[in-house]
Image (cartoon, rainbow, N blue to C red; front, side, top):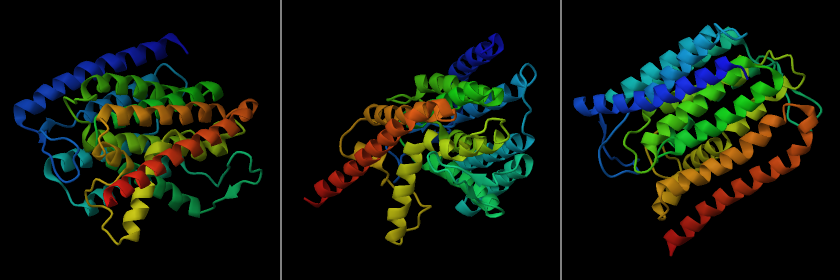
Length: 346
């Protein structure tokens, strides 16, 4: 990495650390507080919206970094991100209907795909034949971005968990970008790491400020968009980017998807607030926020780091231990769920 990248990362940390504290004081003075509800895992009103600082730092760093490094800025991503942050901030204040938010999520995702395109085919390691997507790939791509926006938002329910997942996924993209020469991915990934760490100083249990929908939705949108933004890499393995992007956020995707599936089977409205995610189950069973967030962070790092190296064929030997980590961590979370259900019945 160059001096420019180190400087950008350092500025990102400092700007986020002090920016979040300033924003916290500002929200306190205006009464923008998150009051406990049926979805909450906290008991006292707390300032929210600190993720706005993360979004601003990431977007400014991404745009300014292109002045010094060899990459082009995706206008579709910038536009979509601004829409996501705007609608999410309005939702933080006015509690907008799910329909309006979903419409904006759809438009934002479309901006990205129209600007940078999508994959005609995708690959999974160890499976030689690529999966041809054709026009269906456009629909899948938009749905993936929309899903991750909402999944990340739903998973941001306890102190620290969204920040540690962001740092882990950011590290995955940073390593991947360094391996195959994607300076844009290096900047976004690295800035997200340092911005998340700066934010965690304020958000670790007991949190002094929450990320809010604006921050969590922005991170979900960013991680959902990145495989498409960097799909034109000259690396021969670039078709596995969607697969790796999934692994980088695997704990959040798995937890949210399993919970969504369970609620659908029961005929519940999946967009309403609840406390049935696996991480919430752990907290309800007596584990602290910091314990659960640390667990999710360890799982996320254990998957994201080896997954990033898989982009290079010479590291293909990491696939087996990576598969083992994914399997064991997934089994662990499922076990937690069933133990909790058994304890509830007795």
